Image (cartoon, rainbow, N blue to C red; front, side, top):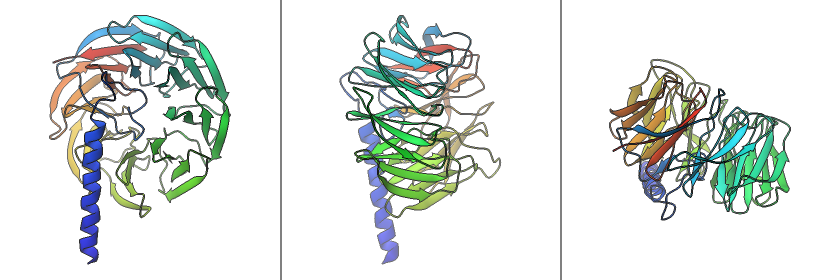
Length: 378
């Protein structure tokens, strides 16, 4: 009886995973968009209408000599991206022409812009969350935290969520920046929050997967993971998936609040900093072991692996049955989602620590030497 119930629950989880993958692969609107880190509130990294295989540069924008670790947001034919030279820029997706620049206090690190209701938000390394007008880059408001911000903002209704290295998850009003609440964890909040059913989930540096209610900042879920985590949690059904600095990838179930499976590369033990993408029953992410891993979402068993020439901190994007991911070897790889075979690559000539964003049949990604590339193919 227990075994039958277990298989029933597993089948239900897989159905939920496939349904979520299908729904998330649909366009957000008539014109598809990539409005935040990992594209959607569940942080799946999945979209429709990919850029193709034989990637070529449509345009290149030079931010300066400082790295672009921030991943782009793309909304309404405009690319929004930050760089460590201290600027948030808005560029035309079609031709890369500069629309506006906004100067922050210090550099923008890994914090990636989020866009909604005509507002663009991003955090900087001085610990300030900035809100600017999407149309002209004029400042709207700022929110000061007590530590640097590397997490990306997430917009939920009329509220914005952001983690800080001061150990708090902050919630502010989208239009005014008024602080609504903050929740103190036991370590820096590096991960971007995944939002599901009114709860913000963060995989913390304190070794705990927490669920914080967005309405009032009350903790609803606390699942010890035992792992220092830099990656953000990706959700499908009742499960969350993320890699850790303990050299493994973990899956947790919200119903049982227990670990479902654990994966570790049996050959080479290195941390996982890349956030996972979820599609077709697979968990795909890069590792500092220089390998792109695809794992079975139900069991955690490896489906395929693809080796690059350097570590991978970039988080993959999935579109049209293809995986797009950057490596510190200076290449953007296009892989077959089902088999892991290489379909194409683009040579950027510099490490690609940022994650790809895809919209309008184009892919945008930043490089360690301060460039932003827009790519498309066939």
